[in-house]
Structure formats: C-alpha cells, structure tokens
Image 1 (tube, rainbow, N blue to C red):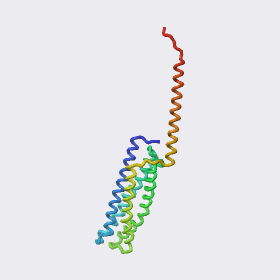
Image 2 (image 1 turned 90 degrees about the vertical axis):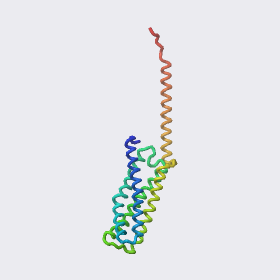
Image 3 (image 1 turned 120 degrees about the vertical axis):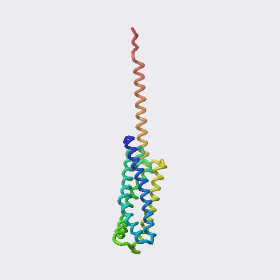
Length: 200
C-alpha cells in the first residue's frame, strides 16, 4: 500500500529533519567530548560532561528514535518497501544497530555526567570513559555519513524478497493485460456480429 502524496512528503520531511538533526547533534557531542578530554580547566571539563548528558537524552536519543520510526514507516508505505532493496535493508540494519549502540553508550554518558555533577575534578580512572566518548561519537558520525550516502545514491540491487515481489507484480500485470486483450477481442467480435438495422 502506497501512502498519499501529502502524508508521504510529511513523513519524508520528518525523516530528513531527524536524520540531519541526529548528525548535527552528534557533531556537537564530539566537540564537547573532545573539550572534556583535552581541557585543563576543571570547570570547563565539568560543564562539558553535564551538557553531554542533556544533549544525549533530550536531543540525540529522540532524534535517533524519530529517524528510525519515520524511516520504517516511509519504507513500508512507498515503492521502496522495507525488505525489497539492499540499500534500504542495509540502512535499516545500520540504524537499528546505531540506535541500540547509542542507548548502550548512555551508560558512560550518565557515569561522567553523574561524577561531574558531584565534583569539579574527574579522576584518572575515568580516562577510558572520556576517550570512549570521543571515539564512539566519531564512529557515530561515520555511520551517519554512510546512512546519508545510502539515502542519496540508492543502489538498486533487489533482495531475493524484492525480486520475488517484482516478478509477482509483472506476472499480475501480464495477466491483467492478457485479460484486457481478451475482453477487447470479445467486444470487437460482438460489435462485428451485431445486426445492421437499416434506417427508415
């Protein structure tokens, strides 16, 4: 089932906005994570990790979930389908993995934010978590870039499911064409055999 044009455009708009927002928020997150890891000013470090928590829970997580939901809905109710093309399927898998990875990543964000809320100094035992903030957000940017490229170029390879659906559709169209041709032939014969009534 294909959704009406107006609804499809609204869903696509929501998907694009959430995807762009997710990318931008992760870029801001990376900048804050680098600041928290490299700054020598304890207050700057503390502020960076406090802001990371807010950014994660109030911006990144909602945008990631919105992007996932709107992407699924847009795929299900457009010609692309959710499982017909490899690029859509790969994008779905990457987005689901990235979203679950993000939710797992929030544990480290909560840890650093909790420590920053209690004290101005972060101990050296948190250096691994600080590096993790940087590497994870940099990796997330690469993943989001891959998703964007897939969306823009849309490689055409059909999955086996998509090939089967396409074959069924072609077969259905061929049957319909044959049925219409047969109907036209029958109607043509009926018209040819109709008696000619002279005009009086």
